[in-house]
Image (cartoon, rainbow, N blue to C red; front, side, top):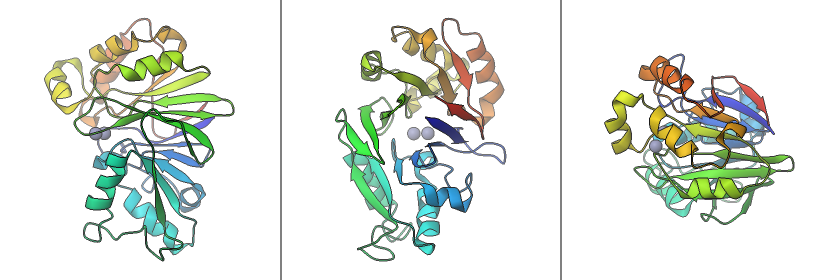
Length: 255
Ligand SMILES: [Zn+2]
Ligand SMILES: [Zn+2]
């Protein structure tokens, strides 16, 4: 699998972009930077976007990519998520108020976007990949994804604090090549991390210890808040028994 980091931060500045990853040029995971971080041709090549949850730092560029694609006659971009997440997007985002309803533009027969519901825990085909959604622990419904292709599986944590079911599933997943894992705040901001459903390096280490062999799993960290970038990186560098890499914009990993 070819994994590209389009945006990997829990906030935005000219040097930080909100969350978006792309697998093999065709499947996006979250949409926080799909237009701010990709040229038009790359936007047009996408077939689907997995959406972990409806927070703006994960969905905002669905607005602009829908507009760009419909102007160029692209096939519908499949937006895949749980029933709750898709329901929020329909009611509060593509609602003809905040943004036009691109599920019927330019026409209901060939719209710019279409929705695909993924039931948690049920393997579902999305853009040719076998995808499982696992509910995690955030302030609104949010899911992790396990994405399996021909050459192995990649896990994506979504936004989460300490959680259980995800680690059970990953311990049973064969061919797991790597994991995109959130960490947002430094340890001194633990209270804020807890109330907002995010990890600090300390809770991250405790959760990774729920894996049978955390050292064997390449773990790619994302969602660090720009205000705390250096401190979170320093604290993560001190963690033992894990295999961590901090994602940067433009990174490419072959898993
Ligand atoms: Zn969130
Ligand atoms: Zn987020």
